[in-house]
Image (tube, rainbow, N blue to C red; front, side, top):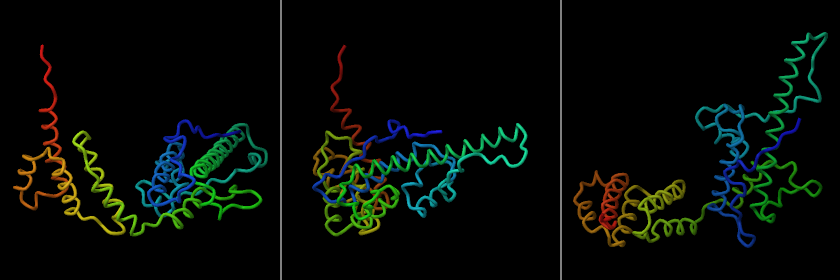
Length: 262
């Protein structure tokens, strides 16, 4: 029996590669994590609770076990060279033993094929310089799991430093154009909050101030801004801002849309 992983069914058939002249960093590794996670989940498995495919191969156990509806994942083992039918088995017993053996073998082969394919994708996306510490002189990365590779990269290159936090604020404050969906602005602020959450948190008020500054600079929300500033402080959370300016942007675009004559 053979098994293969249909890579063309992956969410990402090729991971977002790190350029050869750049070191991995928090942001580039985060993208690779997300893409590997999505790919691993596309290959079904009844293991680990049965809800997340082979996601456990690319997550640390503590992270996987914190997901809802999971049980600890155990890598399947090969069932051996042939079914064990015992002494004087009946025909139905042989049939059932063969079925169970085939199912266990298929589970193992699918797991190994998934592990190998995900590892191959990761190694193709990251320059060898940054994983070479785990490479064996005789058999390369054959005995290195994709999870071990990710842990190595995260530990050595995935830490957030002061420069990363400064760049994060710059991304949050990047000019929003009225030609863009207003959701782009909301997302860039929320993405910045997520990035900084475990390092130098951006509070809700800070997020509101950043968004308001951007919306003010756009010059297209004069009336909406006046209405916003009249609100009580308890009604000026970021979720309130999203609702208020989504409505204002919808009206702005309605006015700008040419009317068709008949």
